[in-house]
Amino acid sequence: MRLGGRIAAAEEVLQDILERRTPVALALRDWAKAHRFAGSKDRAAIGNIVYDALRQRSSLAFRMDDDSPRALAFAATVWGCGVSLPQLDFGDDRHAPKPLSDAEHANLNGRIDLATAPDWVRADVPEWVWPAFENNFTDEAIQEGQALAQRPSLDMRVNTIKAIRSDIQTEATPTILSPIGLRHPPVDGFGRHPDVQSTADYQRGKIEIQDEGSQLVSLLCAAQSGDKVLDYCAGGGGKSLALAADMNNRGELYAYDIDKRRLAPTWQRADRAGASIIEVIAPPAETLPALKGSMDRVLIDAPCTGVGTWRRKPDAKWRLTESALERRVKEQVTVLDEGSQFVRPGGYLFYVTCSMLAEENEAQIYSFLERSEGFSLLSAGEVFEERFGVDGPKPWSEDGLTLTMTPASTGTDGFFFAVMERQS
Ligand SMILES: C[S@@+](CC[C@H](N)C(=O)[O-])C[C@H]1O[C@@H](n2cnc3c(N)ncnc32)[C@H](O)[C@@H]1O
Image 1 (tube, rainbow, N blue to C red):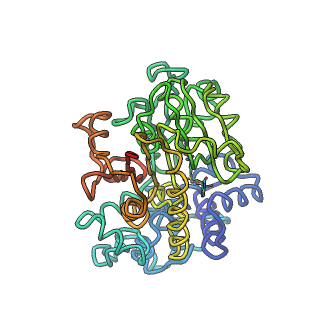
Image 2 (image 1 turned 60 degrees about the horizontal axis):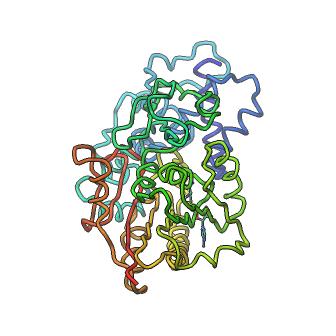
């Protein structure tokens, strides 16, 4: 396919996403199925235009004075993928979109200054979420929003049950904070990340794909060999696998989730990683109640809005609603109340979200501490410095105790982390 055909295809996919609310990955897959002639480079280029358009939807629409899929596709091609204006002369390409109008041309040439846009537009954060961002990040709120609208890196965690970082055959470079992370930087232009899953190291379980932020929160749980640990919202087992490695595959590690289907890949993933200490507890979870009050560590990786992952799931940013946020907040209350019952006196409760909204984070922890007896909040900042040193990038901390990692501050996905000790 030539450039014109790729832009037209991106426009079609964006239309599907914006008008029919189709999730981005599904829309791209459906398009590829219906257009089998498109090669892998075409699919990558179309994907980049579409993802960039969604990441920066409000600022691109402002600069184009138009929020149509066509305007977004052209804007993302130029400002996201680095295509120059003369390249947009499609000549005889009959699959190309119709030629640019004078106004479109002028806008792509920078006629409208983004500096004149409202802050939420410059930050590419939905207008209704913006007050929460400003409240959290004050003078740096625009920078934080903009960092969430950039392309992400592809991070891997070295599975220390099977390998050390220097064993891995890769062009990826060591991550700054995580001592067991490797990173492929964000791709440029129409590029794509290497297919990590087809490498021998991946297939032998030596590496997992896991954002550095997710690695860091798992390491911050400081799980020790021989501990009894419960991963209460284990999902597909990403953090359970990281905890098992940190425990040197010794001890007891239970992976529970209310959703059986989400848990399902965990058995196979644990097998590949050699993480034999993971015991999956799937609903109806008859063995779960017997664990109450006996865990050294309980991790609650709570259901959340996923604001911190907007770089990877930019369609979720524009789909998020206040009622969805309210639902998540209620679920967080439930998982905290349920999961905390498993901590033994003297044990630790970890609360993690991949959100950057105080309502799901600090506010959730403070309300838990008020309604439940026997837990006290410890300083996650001290643990962070102990594990990752004092010289590297620093997360945010509103209260000096909990931590919020963000793309702008730590170069990771956004993650909130709090640690509490159960006294009695
Ligand atoms: C953020 S995801 C977990 C991701 C996972 N820990 C990982 O690292 O891949 C949150 C999970 O919480 C689960 N969940 C929601 N309500 C729950 C409840 N009441 N009890 C247990 N799990 C719950 C969801 O099914 C979802 O899989």
